[in-house]
Image (spheres, rainbow, N blue to C red):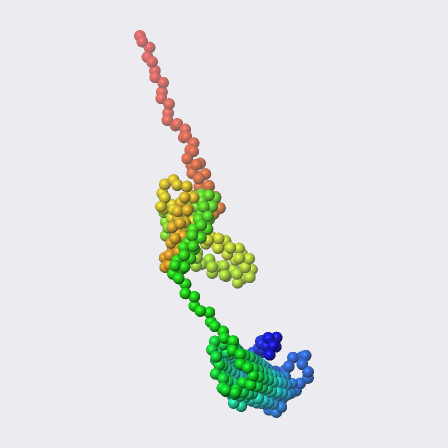
Length: 399
């Protein structure tokens, strides 16, 4: 068989499975064909059925003779009647004990062919069994973990299998892909047997030195990349770094509590806005802001560490680079990196939110009003002197 022919057969099987209509009923039901189909007639329960038949349900047993194609989907499908057309089915178990004049296209966990299929079969399953009484008139194509051919295949077999056993007869060639050779009885195959061995990729043993070198390269990359970020932060926003980390100097636990609560509450709030549809644009905008704030926690965490170590009047860039170096190394150490990362995020978010709270416009206005009131109270008008003036002294004349 040509490669094009095999491709066509696999594509046909995939298309057949895709057009099946899955049902949830408890028994087999016959449905009306599409409007484009030729006029058909159906028997209610017994007797011959004409035209394409559609079945869905948990357990399906097509025991009637069908003059047309059969489409079935369910948990268990059994074709015990005679079908003049094709059988296209998908189920957990598929059993064909009747006669199929056309082709079969099957997808299941277990497939058993005990009847006669006059033409070809395309089967995808975990296990495929062609019993001693089962047969295919032409070819069988498929993929399965376990395939046993105990009956007759009129022409070729083209299979991808984990284990293949042939006790019956194959009138043409056998081509199979797998990891191990098949068990084929002498004289069972009239043509040639072509085994294409597929090997699993061997486990690559990585040297510990290679792992260590990769870890070192990762640390160096993080040092360079994140140091550039902290460098620009120290140059561009030194005052903001001081303001945010000021909230960590006197009361770091307050910032930790705020960051922890915000890390839990904000995602739920954003999700609530998102599902309301109306608040979806606001949720997306706030989500981007929240991501930026979370990423910025590294910069503030690095500056805070540098500020704790270098307590003198050092440049903000020096503090940020020193703290960033310590933080990067701590984040690369297994087991330690998780608590360090959580502390960095919670403390950083809490400090930023506290600073935003102090920078709120109404807070600045209230402070201005209070300052003006205090200044006006300090400037007081002096009270008038109400003490009586002393009486003029009387000078007695000298006699």
